[in-house]
Structures are given as C-alpha cells and as structure tokens.
Image 1 (cartoon, helix red, strand yellow):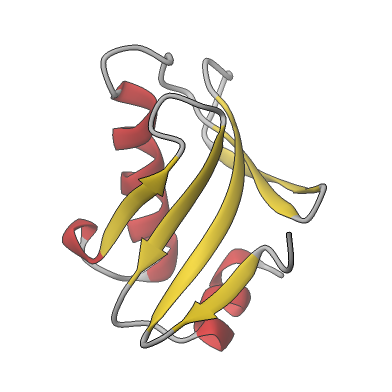
Image 2 (cartoon, rainbow, N blue to C red; image 1 turned 30 degrees about the vertical axis):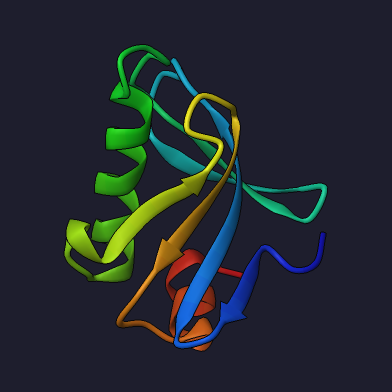
Length: 96
C-alpha cells in the first residue's frame, strides 16, 4: 500500500477506509495509508457507496460519473477511481 492518492495512467486512485452509519459524512484523517471517511448512510444496498461518491464529487468538484468504486464494493476498505482530475488537485481538495 502506497499513498492515499495515487496516479494510475490518466486517472487517480483514492485509497479509502470507510466508516458507514456515522452521524455525518466527513473526512476523518488517515489510517494505514488510506483516507478515512465517515459516511452518514448505512452499509446496505449500496447506500454508503452512493453517499461516498456524492461526497467525493462535491469535494473534488467533478461529476459523479467521473468517480467509480473499483474495489471493495461491500467492504469498508475501498478504492475509488477518479478521472478528469490530477493527483495534486485531489490532495488539495481532500486536505492531504
């Protein structure tokens, strides 16, 4: 495991640890090389993943379609692929 944010060709991979069912959706620091994000939605029927994508799209200033969960669909440890952004922009917008 490298950095929380990595270049992957023309895309950016964001390595995450998600805590679903939290009181609010917010970034809560780094944990084991991953960005830890608390998610207000429960971990059922894709609600937490949808909330995560909505939150990241808003923070990064990109369309939801520019983001996709590429691993960890049903796990709290996830990778999200972001297109149309740079590693530097992602780090800046996420406070890394």
